[in-house]
Image 1 (cartoon, one colour):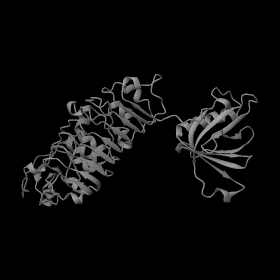
Image 2 (cartoon, one colour; image 1 turned 180 degrees about the vertical axis):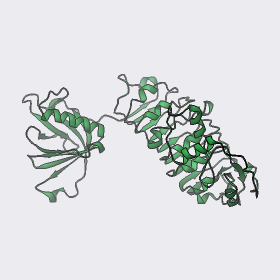
Image 3 (spheres, one colour; image 1 turned 45 degrees about the vertical axis):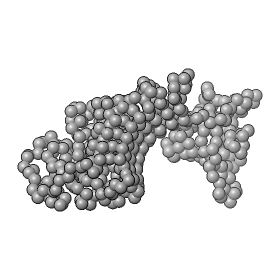
Image 4 (cartoon, rainbow, N blue to C red; image 1 turned 90 degrees about the vertical axis):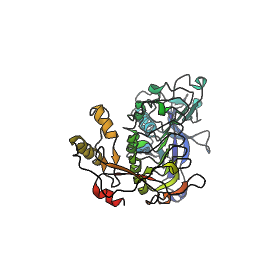
Length: 405
């Protein structure tokens, strides 16, 4: 049994010698000597390629596993008087501790390694598949953390969703029209690249923007997809840090994009945008690219003094507002699909209240505090393009309308 981790050894009798020490990349192995059958713990590092051995039998004073679920544990040996600090993947460490427990309790171990055959070369947690020939004969290894699958067709959804350690998934150049909703089962996925596909030709379903993605996804690339509209459910990705929507055919953006409080990098270049949501003026971005759009072609209106809001709000809309405002989760299967689509279609007033049907929409010109310098530290625009762009304002009441003037 072996794992790849980071370790640090601390001498209890010589505390002054421990200053300045750092964790070292290590192959940690539980091994049995082929002749003496002695069970040992072996540390293979660049400084000790042949391994440093610690006897296990009757030589462990204490094992501290309070933070094992966070990928940390400590082994205190009797001889020598050292503490071994281990950091690594929580799943790997849990399995390692289980095997160690079996050894200490003299239970049968099926996967102990002979000292003569321990492989100290770390397995690559990154895999690139550019053609069918690159696909592993034994299937996708479950320890993968990065997968690049770009062969022109994506047909291995059921195999990918088993990779629970996956942190980066690149599915670009696969002709994907609809994102498989099963992908949101990946519990640790932080980066998803869906660029150079055909999402704009699909059904524009947003059922994949739920469950784990709302908590884990921080980087999303949807560039080069022929998108004409963006799913309003994009506002669910509350931990999104980077969003690339460049080189599509977007004519507008949902107001909910301004609800992405952690968003720092937003690329909207090479689209057909004529205005930006008014709520975007409250965003605090580090990088914003709006080059090569159609802001100069926007048909702008003056803000009217009065607007009719006489229509009575339906009970459905009132209930939906409470669900959105209270952030009540509504995973697939919990309510009828028609209601899920209704809730996913939420827009937001300039006052940040959720709106569905009873609101007014106005596109105002560049004079309305639309300077992009107020939105982002770094702004990229086309040559000779003004930093002031038209805004698409949604208002829920006469009071909000008066604030727009």
